[in-house]
Image 1 (tube, protein in one colour):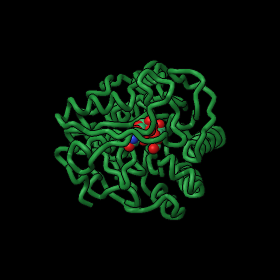
Image 2 (cartoon, protein in one colour):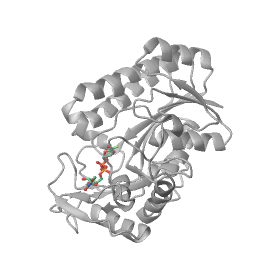
Image 3 (cartoon, helix red, strand yellow):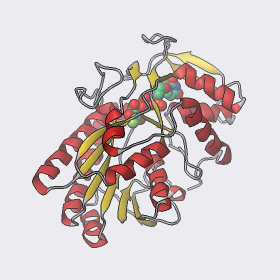
Length: 323
Ligand code: UFG
């Protein structure tokens, strides 16, 4: 099967590309390299540098490519930035994504897998969060992903495009060759590991007055290789659908820091600062549906194993990607 991976030079897209290639798929990575890295593109993949906002280009690629499936990762993904620059999020994550959908229809692509997020739920009323929880995003980032989920539904009912939207919880960890390297980095695990590598003095804890046992926010850290497995399964799903991808286990900010101290042997000094706007206290996913309907079997169920794999990659790549 031939798969187009948009955003295949990014954090999750690069690991999924590697996973697909290991399984014998032919993969073309389409990435603008605005946030991705050329060195994060698996050498076995075909690489096309381009932006999905270039309508003519992406439609041509899909019309001529003979792709069986698309995995769509290309997106901006910083909640905080989306609160100050919402247009960037709607324009790229929704508007440019429509070019890809039109290309998928013109290219007669049989299966579309979309990288969605638990940020589409906003502040959930149930923990762990099931897929039927009300989707009420509290940021333009979450809203842009929800809007694209809605567009998918229309393309499915009008053109018969089969799709699966995967709502990830907190993606973390690394494969042997590919890991997390954002610029600027805002995510907890890579920042904690930067402190362990001596690249930062301390980790800032954003608030310890949340209604959680130790007062810090709880998240569900899901390994990127488990996300990759779900993407492959979703490609073959006989019907369209929406699935959460999380472990069902929550881990607080303080617990992540403590686990990282044990794993790295570094003291990892922490500094308590105020809350970061827009952070819900607890986000834990119920992924029973993905297990039942897609046959998903996540391999990493505790955050320590996830941090360990992120650490293995960070130690081998202390400067991140060179390109
Ligand atoms: N945190 C700190 N200090 C830091 C960084 C993070 O205390 O330096 C805390 C945050 O306040 C939060 C937790 O660590 O409580 C995790 O924060 P991340 O930034 O790593 O991830 P988020 O929970 O903010 O992730 C959210 C959504 C994802 C979405 C992602 C996009 O849960 O679905 O934002 O950036 F994809």
